[in-house]
Length: 77
Image (cartoon, rainbow, N blue to C red; front, top):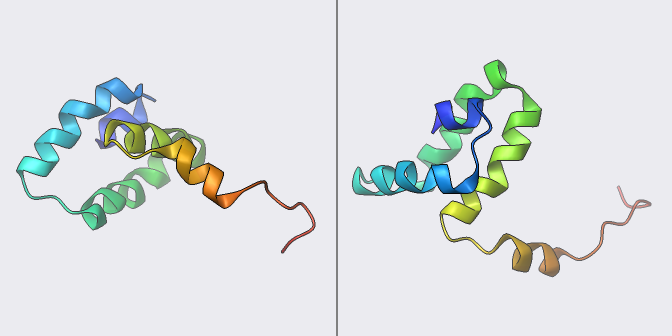
């Protein structure tokens, strides 16, 4: 998964890796640890690009999650 993040792979490339991780009893925390482990070498742009791709490959409905959040409020914070 770390190598796929490094090459900015499309969502379809993550499916086999995620299936293998599931068979090995990987947890969400393990997947997040991969992000942390490779972030220093691949940079934040690759991490930001990979996160929704991995979510899509895992079957997570990214669009529905974003709709629940709603529009960003530039004045908040």
